[in-house]
Length: 280
Image (cartoon, rainbow, N blue to C red):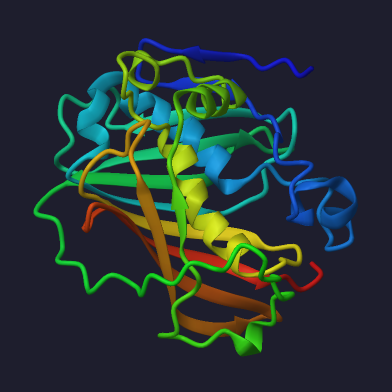
C-alpha cells in the first residue's frame, strides 16, 4: 500500500508526492531494473501520471470547461521518481479564464535547492484547428500476436491497429484514486468525465496494442479536445504514425491518435515518444 500526499493552495498551486503506479506494466522504463540499465536512478513515473497531477489545478477551477474546446500541449523535461515532491504552479495564479493561454508547470526541487520544471503544460481556448481524416479503423484479430517493436519498420502514413474502449465508472474511479484526484468532476452523476490523464494513457496503449514494447519514454503530447470523454462512451482509438527520426541515439515516433465516438472525433492527439532509448 502506498501513501500519497496532496494539497491545494489558495494561490492556485497544488502539491503532491509522486507515485509510480506503472511499475508492473510492460514498459520496463517504469521499473528500477529497466530504467537503471539505461542510466536513470530508478523507475520513471509515467508522463501521463505527471500530466494528471498538472490537470488538477485547472480542473478544480474550471471543471468541464478545461477539457472541451481547448488545445493543450504538454512536454516533459526531466525524470520524476517515486516519492518526488512536486509543486504544480499555474501562471497566472488563479486565472479567471482560459484565455489567454494558461501555463502550468510541474516543479521539482534540485540538489542546488532551486526548483526545476520537469513538465510544462499550456492550455488555451480558441477556434479548434481543423483535423485531417481519421486514421483507418482496423482492429487486430483477438488471437493475433503482437510483434516486438522495430523502429525501422514503423511506416509513416500506415495506420496501426485500432481498438475499442468503453471506460467504466469503476475503472475511472480506480484511476482517479491512483493519482489521488478526488474532484467531483470525475465521480458525480451517471456519466462523469473520465480523468484526462487516463484518457491520454490510451495514446500510450495505441503503441502497446500494436507492438510488444521495449523500454520507451513519452516525450510530449498536443491535444485538441473537441468534447470531454465520459464513463460509458463507446470510443474507437485510432492511430497512425506521422514521422520517425533519430537524435543522439534515441529513436523517435510522432503518432497521431484520434479518439472518436459515433463517427465524430472527441480528442485528437499528436503523441511524441522515444520508442528505442539509448543508454544515458
